Structures are given as structure tokens and as C-alpha cells.
Image (cartoon, rainbow, N blue to C red):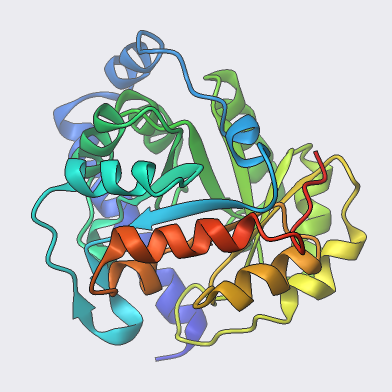
Length: 271
């Protein structure tokens, strides 16, 4: 299967799943609910407290390893990460590849005071209102998957609900598109969307072209304290760590190690 076909199948699967949920709760209703929720938490402020911020991702499956993760309690895991000093919790809600759910994110958010990132393939306005209903403070958009008009429309919708739009990019051209849309936070993703190809060097290629006021987050390939320091040295304000922590024998201790690395003198804060 080619990568383009794999991506098409992923998006088609997401839209099919959204249609099923919308058949139960119509768009008008989910939209109204999303505007009657608890206030959002400031993710940008949380990630820019000091040094290199660390966002820890909760995920039930590791597709690139063909493995699932045994999680007894999402709430307990989120509290562990908060106790370890994480600046933000990301929750993988994608059902098809990661076995996640919006209920997982809701459980995590209710357990901690940290901002919550909804990790999913977001391609439809319904998903944005839905994410807000379940407690999202940050919503990612994969620039690669969206035409510019659609990307800008979804960005505006995210921001209109008080959330932060995170533009995930994999090329300098996508970063240019993100800046044209006026996003404040750009995540450079080292993983391809539909394969196990990892390119850690793309962060250093993209970041020099970003204005100083843009928050830069490194996504993917963070497997050690050294990776945190390397990304920070290349200009990362924060990193997202998921697979390494979720596969660790002691996830809380693993998270603590990454947070400590982010406070190393080699990781000065830009903010």
C-alpha cells in the first residue's frame, strides 16, 4: 500500500467514525454543548514556564511497534505525570490506530489541573466541538491533510472556542502555510503520518524559518534526555514524549527524567 493511499484510508476511517457519532448527537447539539463547558486552560503558558516544556502523551497502543499498553487507570496515569512535573498531558483519542477515545481524555482532564491536548486526526468541525466538550485545551491540525482554506477555517474554529490550535508540520512549506493561517504554536512532527519513517533532523531544518513569537514543539523521536536537550538546543520550546514513557516499566519515573532534562542549563527558556 502506498503512503498516499494509507493516508486516504486513515482520513476516510476518521470521517466514517465521525458520521456515526454525529448520527447520535447532531452537529447543532454538539456545537451548543461545546460553548457551555468549563474554561480552557492556558497551554502556551504551561509549556513556557521554564526551560524546555514537556508534554506527556497517554496512548493505549503503539502502532509502530505493533503493541498495546496495559493501562489500569487513565486518571491515575495522568496524576502520575502531573506529579512527575509534566507541563501538559496529551491524550491519544484516535480509535482506529491507537485504541483511544474522547472518554479517556475526559477522564485524564478531570484528574489533573494541567492543560489537555487532544491527539487525533482532526479533519471535520464536528471533531473540534466534540473535543472541547470532552475537555480539550489544545487541538492539533495536520497541515499535510488539509487544503489551506479548510486548514484556516478549522484553525479559526479552534481559537473561537478558546482552545489553542497546534499546526503539525513536516516540511518547510507546511510551516509557511501554518504561519499564513496565523497559528501561534507549531509542532514539527518527526514521524510520517502513515508509516514508521522517522526524521529527527527535520526540526532543525524548519525552525530557523519561524518567527520568534511562534512557540515551537518537537513531536516524535524523543527517546532520551539527550534528545530533549538536542531539540531544545535546536530551538524547541517544548517536546512531546509518548511512546518511550508509555512503554517504560515505570512511566512516572520515566516522565520525571524527561522533565528534569528539560530543566537542564542547556535548555534555556525563550519566554
